[in-house]
Image (cartoon, rainbow, N blue to C red; front, side, top):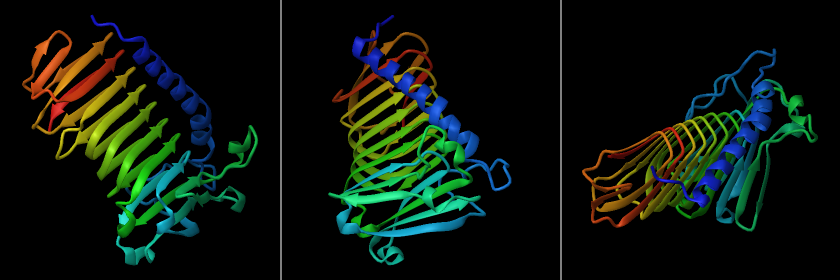
Length: 300
């Protein structure tokens, strides 16, 4: 049995602690209150990639695309869709649309700012310790990026406590996703760096990640499909749950697995020497740190 390094163990413990705080605190509060409809009934968010039905558009904002270099979204519950559209749909600007199910006060609507190339969008909430209990209804955010600006982004970051999050058609240097729970779907994206932090939930990511893939997973089910090209490196740390990493059957990699419990499988015809797997030219470096759960390395 291979022992985890102190650094790997500390990283996984930090993810677990963060997940407990997010889900047990803000996530629980949002799930208990922000998902209540106008009559106090449960109103579940739309599946990832779908606009919620029976919603009212409450806020629409346009931002000059030339002033947006990075995107930072912090949306606690409900749903988020980030997509690319022809310039004609948004007049060449970045479009922000907030829709709601139920009654939401104007003071609780989305908050946004654009400064020094960074567009930040925040989930509006009353202030104070019990502020989230005053939130009624479910909020849904849609961010539409004009195609002419879609390939000019440096960083796209999404933080979510609970709900559904969908991103498609993006091209950026770094794609960073941190989720407490819920569902995440990412498709048809290009990024030099993919960085995932997952406490729980279902996460499905597919795209071209040329430089590196990083995933710190406390629990849940995570699937990452690297298309067209092998990333230069990957680092996957798992406390529990299930992680599937799919790579193109070309080039090669050297995978090193540090495992306390659980299972690791490799679908490639790799040469194994203890906890090291070498396939093809062995160029890409893959590091897996597993406390428990199941990790699979698959061929696309």
